[in-house]
Amino acid sequence: MRRAFDALVARVDGCGKTTLGPMFVGDWSAAPDSVQMRPGNGCGRDYRVKNVVLVEVTSCAFPDSVLDIVMTTILGRVPN
Figure (tube, rainbow, N blue to C red):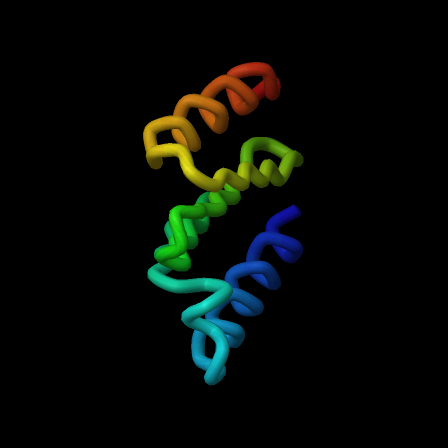
């Protein structure tokens, strides 16, 4: 799972550096177990790793707090 997550971070970084990257990636940040992207069109995409699970939550027209709630709910069901 770690290799898949690291590859995802590298892909986001590479895409963000292209001419059209801001449209797809926008502002993004990465931590050891998470990636957040905010392209600025009212949408967001979060990825998080827990145990052997990589979770993606995508949202448009909802505040970031909704992404956090959905992600927390999903990760709460993943065993440690």
